[in-house]
Amino acid sequence: KQEVTQIPAALSVPEGENLVLNCSFTDSAIYNLQWFRQDPGKGLTSLLLIQSSQREQTSGRLNASLDKSSGRSTLYIAASQPGDSATYLCAVSRTGRRALTFGSGTRLQVQP
Amino acid sequence: SAVISQKPSRDICQRGTSLTIQCQVDSQVTMMFWYRQQPGQSLTLIATANQGSEATYESGFVIDKFPISRPNLTFSTLTVSNMSPEDSSIYLCSVEAVGGADTQYFGPGTRLTVL
Image 1: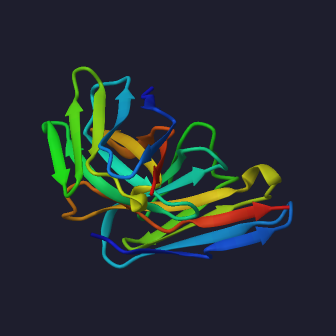
Image 2: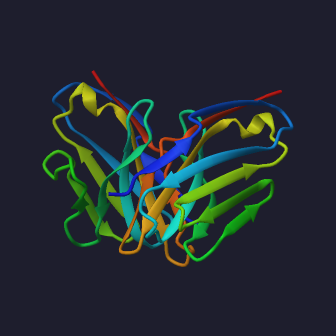
Image 3: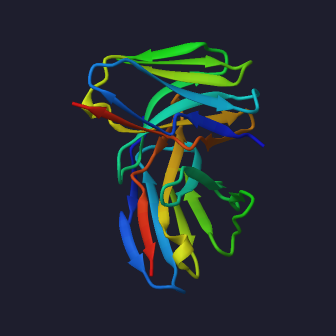
């Protein structure tokens, strides 16, 4: 059974810092990995999707990497802003089962 | 991308009653899923909603408690039956769109409180 772990559970940084969120998964036979953002009381916003054959994806100040063999992904946020404050969720799917298995999330607070 | 709406956005219900949540997508989609997010927790898959056939439920979730319908490629409902306070959660619908490069999109969620 796939298990997804995210470290740290919570993170508070001053504005402008670069930061890294970590995600690990136990079964490397994934189809893809997706990073989401969830604001309090809101649904999920997809940030980046990495196919199992890819190593990284970039969107603006966000960069996600994937090391499938070691079961790890990182989300790098450059020059953090208070508007980045949210919970970040990592989720994986596998071939033949496209539903997502989620990690417990990292709650990020960026201090102005 | 796919735009997903859910109704109701929130509700407060009495123990023992049932609530049906609707999920509407603005385009035809291949896969539809229902997730639950309990307070302070991450998301857990309830079931995959299959068009024209019975939903596929995850371990710990049963059809009698969470009946699901998917009559076409853009609509699904989830019913939470015989509710108890433990059912208080956010219920989210998600889809994998045709030609969406496998990205899954989520609805805004339905916040359910059971008294």
